[in-house]
Length: 237
Length: 140
Image 1 (tube, rainbow over the protein chains, first blue to last red):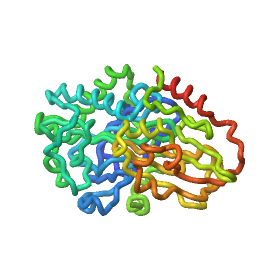
Image 2 (image 1 turned 180 degrees about the vertical axis):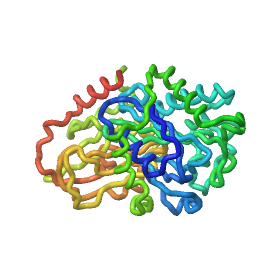
Image 3 (image 1 turned 45 degrees about the horizontal axis):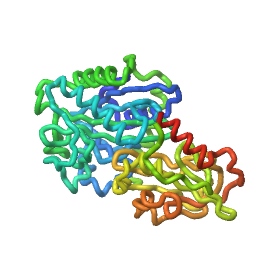
Image 4 (image 1 turned 180 degrees about the horizontal axis):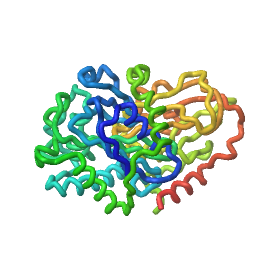
């Protein structure tokens, strides 16, 4: 398990790619936050479809799909593992149900009754913002009738990167969504990370060793991260 | 547990990869697409869940196993990999606007790119029977 608090956007994205491309076959759970506040576009999103993208401290494009996330008042996590791992095996929808099941268990420790959305519409759904939290599918995690966890995956070279985002509070671009502090005002990102780690450890028999990125991972993250903030990549669509 | 997601047996006029692409000889060229299994894996059987696809430019030279494009469902982006080395000579550009075709007919209408291969042998790839055995083992 790796934690990196307050890292810059290029490093954050580069480290996730480095961990995903890792050939050691392991599972890495990572928790992180961003500085400055950053808007991350989904891999296929058009810049013009996200009106708020000029109103944040930085702009990146992820390699995972889905909608844009404003990384502020928020815990980001990633899970890198082989596609054959029990966490990710089978159709993508099933892997979402496993990951989201463990997240719902973690959220229950804060007395948040998080559930999968199912067929209903949400009070947080919006059509024109391009924000992930304003677009929901049946497998999304909700509480208070609003979307509470942003999720997206990348499947490449036999490995899977799952990105997740849980908001402590709303942001200027993500109003009317489910937040942790609406239910637990004193909650900090570290508390949430600990609960998620415990839930994944229990659900998937994973024995996480807490670490920081080693020198090779930091070097790879810096090198790979350049692309994510480059004008050509960010504005490629 | 056997793979029961598709009742249709896979065509035996082409070869298959473990990353779920197929490649079919067509004269001096070869057509490449993705299998019904790949489509179901991405879309969970909902054709509207496939939302974007990026294909390469004509003229691009690809190595065996190289990623030539990407496809996105509502919940994941996945690589498209080229089974053999060759040059892209045509793309099925209509697919990018009509991804539902991949759900309806991944074997014929749903081809993605046409390449001029460096070599004609596909012996290292799986035939339909071996691919279905691979899927069955994967499901265990």
